Amino acid sequence: MECTISWLTFYFTILFYTIFDVTTAQNNWKGNEVRWSKNCDFPGNNIGNQTIGGEHCGTICQNTLAECTHFTFTLFQGGTCWFKSGPVSPVQAIPLLSPGSVCGFLTISWVHEIGLSWSHHCTFPGGDFENQPSPGALCGPMCMDNPQCTHFVWTNVEGQGGICWMKSGGATRESAILTPGARGAVCGFRHNRSPNGGVPIVTSSTPWFDTDTCECVC
Ligand SMILES: *[C@@H]1O[C@H](CO)[C@@H](O)[C@H](O)[C@H]1NC(C)=O
Image (tube, rainbow, N blue to C red; front, top):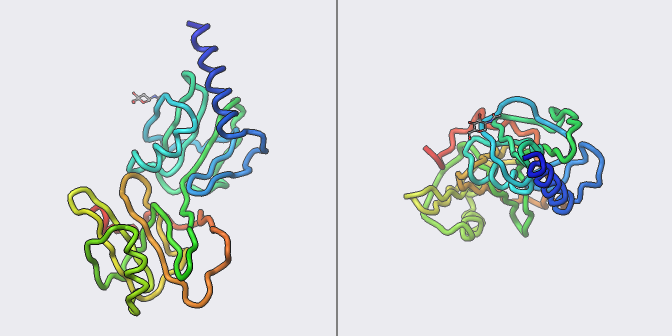
């Protein structure tokens, strides 16, 4: 038994070092949609755990667990993701002197294109003036074609199919709300004049959930 555990530990440690290239200092956050750092923990707010390799924590948090916003990975039982819910900020990460441990959180990570920026896993509350069935890839162009449209949300809820929610009145990156889990939302906004900066911006200070009426799941 002891032997099994140590081999598992060894296996996951090697796997982890290989996949995450763990050579950086603590709280040196890496990644875009999933930000992670080594040797840290977000204490509390546990909603579940899964014995699995650390490279899966972010994906499971993002796509499988409706409430998951952040996680901690430790080598407990050969490798365990501890999933957590609720708003979180990177400054809440505390050092965890447990070899191979990682903590991470989901963010809104914008992709900038000509005329608009968009991200997975986010929504804009309110501002709706029109919605119609649409494939995801056509929602942005549909908004661009409508002078009234300043921003949009695309949802793909089971039983409803893809819907493009066109919105007016303007939006900023800061007004986007993270929608973690399998809620299928994409949000985007049009650029007024020039895009705000040329590189993808990670928004981690968004007030998550508090105004999240989320037409996508109700
Ligand atoms: C891990 O999750 C299982 C359910 O999947 C639960 O029964 C167990 O108590 C959890 N372990 C800890 C240490 O929280």
